[in-house]
Length: 125
Image (cartoon, rainbow, N blue to C red; front, side, top):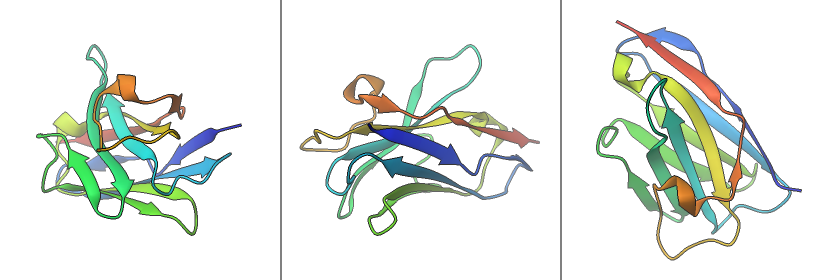
């Protein structure tokens, strides 16, 4: 049974940094498709970052240069390091997985088959 459990969400001021974690159980995520997506109230779910591991990553235009996605294969954990946060980054952040993998990272929600419950990130100005 695949389970994704996010942690690390918080309420912080603009300019701060946060690191989100996603603990993966039920399969080994190494080499498979993993991603972070977010959803703000009244908005569609937005792809933030995706990875297949081994340096294969993709980022949404709004977070390029500020966010870093990475896999810790030893801990079977996905992380998202976020810096220079702005109020526009306020959203619920979801970890997503597709154990079947893919040939490149993906930001679209429809590429993912498993989802965590999400963790809230709130940025105040």
